[in-house]
Figure 1 (cartoon, rainbow over the protein chains, first blue to last red):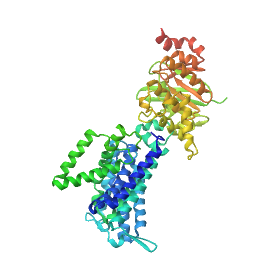
Figure 2: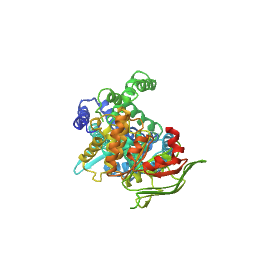
Figure 3: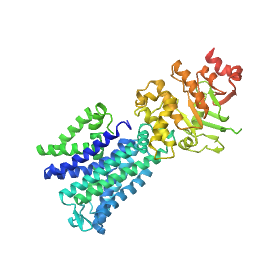
Figure 4: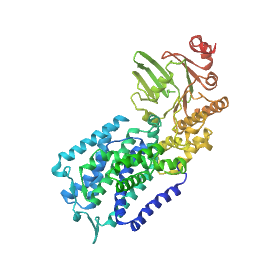
Length: 320
Length: 242
């Protein structure tokens, strides 16, 4: 599994990034926008996958990490007038800190209890956003003005409302997180995480503090999901409580399951697939969610390991 | 010489059952000690207490002069107490290489040296005769090879005390001969404590034997002394070997 073909693995990942880069110049406007959104949300899915796919911890509360980033970045821009880079860092920091606190509490449980505890914490987070409507805009949310979404570097300035700039920023974040995930998965830390998923008791008896390793994974996962949320707020200019709702805890789970849990590229494939099935289906009928549901059921029936998971199992054993 | 490991009044009760009942035990460095006894005598519970997988109800465990009674299992492993499971519990979906890489990478203090993991893993696999199976998922290995992989993982921890829980269970006769050789090899660098039902293996390997019965130590001595002990014959040897 490891060390088998690092060159091939890196070539594949760099190839995917290059392909996405080229697509910016090829895609029609509408699809260019959709792809930027998909890449930003694929980061969310990658963060979720790190915990769910590799460590085997099923959280139903990741909307809180995404929205911690979303609000962490959005509110500092909106209320404090922070610049884009500072706001992004603030968003990621909020997510990491929240993940540390939640991890310390939720990791006392496992299995179904872990799912419920994370879900309850996410609900609390969601209700807090509504409660502090004076700052958060409540269920209306906040729109971040175009003027606030400009990065000035020296004399030059990057306007994040420009579609190409937006696409490239989403791609940059996606690429960095993809390569970070790949590095984590191939590292010694990644090997311990997989061992915990496979048999936590045994991993302890090899001398590993499994709780500390799981906590590190929760924080990494939370920080990545928050990066996705922060980017989403800054790129698309909207911060709203719907992103903290339970739906946004379920979505990354679906994307990861579709694309293939514990595959590095699965989150992108799953997010892409689901967005396009929804997009195409809604062109035909207003009952598009029915079609999405049927597609999901078929996939789970015939590809229980997700798209990339199945490909890895049948044809390409070296996929990371 | 100071014992490597001692227990004082070590007990573990499950409800009314005294699985381990006030055991005083001492293990000298470098010896191969076998624990035998009928089913339900408390052997596995006793070594689980030593490894920290379960907590004692009362009593004390001292390893290398330090009280480790309340220490979590993973820290005991770091001190050098390694435990291989009675029921094979290798990571079935990981390759043999990755299974051994887990203990190897933990014992390495230099986090940068990528080659060191590979060298350490291949050494442990070679010592157990599994080198040519490094890339095979552990779940696809034969049962005997999975047992050997367990031992390789234990070895890779560079233990000072290696606890083997019924290591020859399910091995073919030819594999048992290799295994005996392997344990002799291990004992040059570590103290070995094994639970074993196969009496010929015990007689060939053990320097000393401790006999458990109903959670207590019934007898202790060299293989010859144990063979001659009438209590042991009544409780155990006589019962199972006619």
